[in-house]
Amino acid sequence: DEFGEHGGLSHDDKMYSELIDIPLIIYDPSRDKKEICDTLVSNLDIPPTILNVFGLEPEKSFEGHSLLPLKEYPHKGCYGEALYHETGKGEDINRDIYFYREDDLKIIYRANLDTWELYNLETDPGETDNIVDSSPETERLKSRLRPKVRRWLRD
Image (cartoon, rainbow, N blue to C red; front, side, top):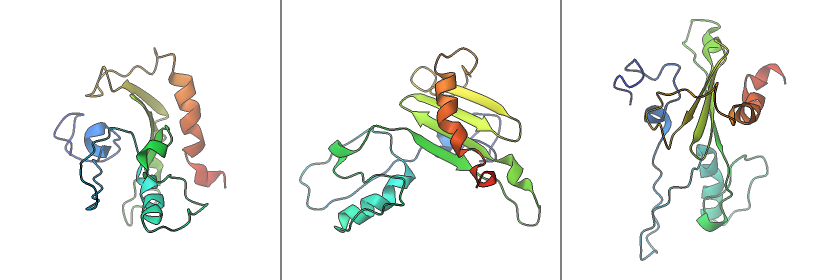
């Protein structure tokens, strides 16, 4: 939860680590030792993992990958989005926000404001130094995120 880190006490219109980073725990009673992994994974990987655990064939329409076995998990980035909507308010979906994270770089796009933020989480874990105007990675990361932005308008 946010406790003033980015000027508020809520989840509204924010994609910062204190709000979106979630630990994932998988319990396997047949294993003798515990294993800790710091691989970047996505919620999209949970359904393929469940199919794998139950010995079912992967679903071709799933975007994620099974987390098991972890050594076969592909190195990839993660996407996220928040489509703001209040019942009865109408077109408030225009406050949509997106992010893409690859290793320690995270880019955030606020569609209604047409603004970008880029953070290096290794050197700036608090996401306070927006390097979007100075990073050589900006355009590459924007190109990874743009196809996800308001894709429902293109369909």
